[in-house]
Amino acid sequence: MSTVLNDARPLTPRTGAQREARFFLIMALVSVGVLFAGFAPSFYLKSLIHAPPPLSLLTVMHGLVFTVWMALFVTQAALIATERRAWHRQLGMMGALLFGAMMTLGYWTAITAGKLGHAPPGAPAPLAFMALPLIAITGTLVLVGMALWNRRTSDWHMRLMLAAMFSLTSPGTGRIVIPMGLADYGTWIALGVAELLLAVAMAYDQLTAKRIHPAYWYAVAVFAIVHVAVAWAFGS
Image 1 (cartoon, rainbow, N blue to C red):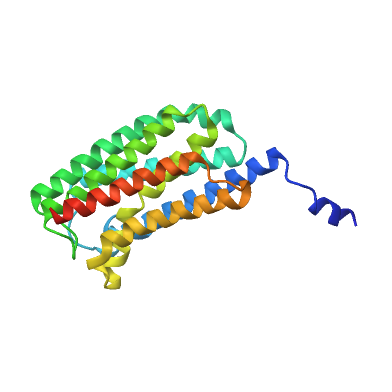
Image 2 (cartoon, rainbow, N blue to C red):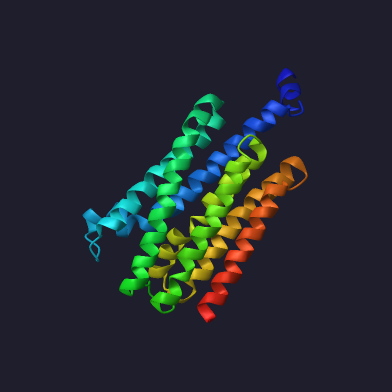
């Protein structure tokens, strides 16, 4: 009987926050999993399967900084899930600096690929395709900027950072669908998967809090602008 009563107790704010933090950690791990799966052949497992082409120093630097930032992102989510908020705050500045380096290398890598005429199978011409990473990186930058602006308001900060991580999954998804024979639709599938992850997070809010947090609606606006801008750039 006591077990039944314990299970029937309503959630306290503390319990609700713990479950929410665990959900954010799971979604962060899913996002990192997508990125690892997408970049495994061309970066993480490249030395084992010897996939062409060879990596440039710029690509290696970008990949390493991106990997460290992803690891830090998951660590930050885990610290919140385990209620180590002080450590989370102490690592925050490092994360912001690392993110700045990652964005700089991302822009540099995208522009260099455009100059060299690199584009994945099924993509538009290289200079047109270059619009995708440039626009997508800018969208992520906006989301992280809003998250840092709201860093003292944890409910806004966490959701905006999670949305930013979703937006970063697109390159990984795009690489996953190429060997599946869906290269012609890779860009739209990649954007769609990021949007689906955001929809799952919004649905969790609706199920647990009976409302969708306003931070997610700002993320929806950024995702929509990125999607429309990429479509315009590809057709221009």
